[in-house]
Length: 299
Image: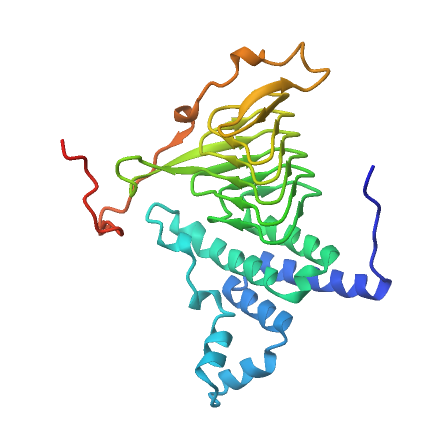
């Protein structure tokens, strides 16, 4: 093993535990999530005095006012807020929690690894559809919504990972997601790029997605498989296979698994359409082309 156990001093551990328990309790209660997020960010940022001056109507600069207002997630927008097909009811809560996750990561205290891992793990219970025991989430992870993500036990997601759950994303037990990985669950039509297609993307138990790799929407990475650095998964990767390249192709079966794994020559099947997710748009939606161009071929 290359890891060791690390612990904080007793006083720091007690303070951290009290804080996490309080936030967890408030998020689990009937209290307005927006208010909880606002309070936590104000106090972690040390900006309570400025906030109270704002509440009292005292004079402050425009920059100070917009900073203080932005602790309240109701005064912000996220990119995913503009997606027409999202579940509005689920998004109203997940937006607030995602804002807390993102803003926490921008604070100096997010570099305290022991505290940050436990804070994000606590948030994951409230943000994700489901999150297993013993998961670790490092800095700079982003989501589309969060509420369409299911993660199993003892998974680890490293720095600057993007987990796109515009469709649905399932990650199994003991999965390792390395720095810079992108896992997608939506795609765009090649002719009309404003047409979005959502999928269920699956990363099975014990998979390792290595540095800067990408899993495209609707694909399945099979149990115990490895995707090599900067590999781009464009079709299913069978269990126990090692896949590398752009696009990622199976080049080897993990030693000891040869008798149970799909043969190399039978790998590479694309089952994306089996995992396509239909959705309905609001009947009164005003559709527009954000690119303002002719999207159709000449013939």
